[in-house]
Amino acid sequence: MSTYHYKKKIEKGKIFKEIILIYCTIVLFILLFNSLLFQAFKIPTNSMEPSLKEGVRILVDKFSIGPKYPLTNRRVFDATESQVKRGDIIAFYSNEYYNKGAFYRSITTFLYTISFTLIDVPSLTKHYDSSVYVKRVVGIPGDKIRFRLINDEVILTINGIPEKEIIPENYQIVKETRSNSKLLTTMIIQNEYILKDNEYYVLGDNRISSSDSRIWGSVKKDQIIGKVIFKYWPFDAFGVAK
Image (cartoon, rainbow, N blue to C red; front, side, top):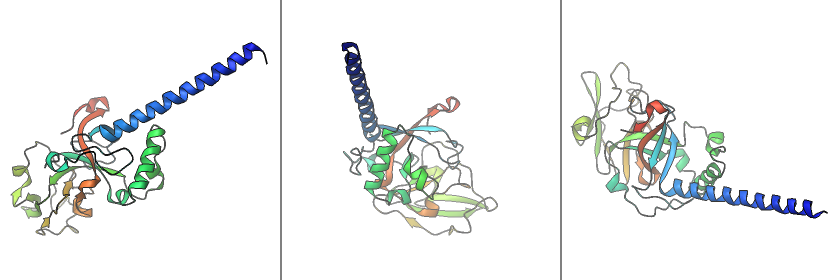
């Protein structure tokens, strides 16, 4: 083998190692960034309209509530109770996906990260809408949730007070009435739901087209990924999530 070809072989080997090193560094950075600080998601349905339209890309703040160690279910610190308030929009794991266990979630998250979102195992195997939901918190631990039918309109009350009188955030909802509701046949009006420790009651802003706590119950604290803080795509939706 000539000196020229030998040098070429050495250079190719060096370039290959450098590419692998750069790739591993980027993957490690993204893994740490996603686990400890922020993570991007896409709104899977129209359940949060008009606040968040289907397909909008959002940024979720994990750090403020307590980030989890990479590929684990253990938080570095836990500030969920102090940071997650009524009116906040949160991202959380669906019950079915969460109940598959920490190991399954760790593996699927790892594959999703190292492939730069090209391999999404849950989307290939799941039989449910999404592994991650985005909803608005209307009830926190200790709250008493009740739905009333007043003048043919479904009214949410929290500790006996109408939703809009107890939640300070200004957000619009698609109201439910006797004529447009899809849940009145399954939702028991006047039945009180008392939230236990570490439980949160969440609803979609589009009340007539949302699968939420009215159907599958409360969200556990450990299911919460973080608070939705920003919309970054498409460009016309760019801005703070409210």
